[in-house]
Length: 125
Image (cartoon, rainbow, N blue to C red; front, side):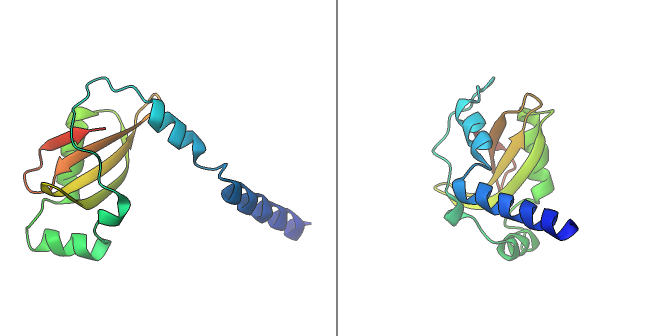
């Protein structure tokens, strides 16, 4: 009986992932999320412009960029009570930036861009 339930749960998960049912709520809330204090900036870099975890560690070790914790602290000045979901170091037209995704208490996602050299908030989208 346990095997049947486990197989059923696995099949339902595969079907949900294949049809795109999982993740659509996050996309909808991102698209409709109002920004209380918008900071205009250039378009966000795409995922393929982001550095790997090893490259991030190397850049921090060489002191080319601030540590991710410092970027999170800077982002929290703009979105104080949000939970940081993801932080990535990405290439941008102005150099390297941290792209942070946060979940606000009202359920909306907010994206914050922090300059990786200075630690200043560069934009919110």
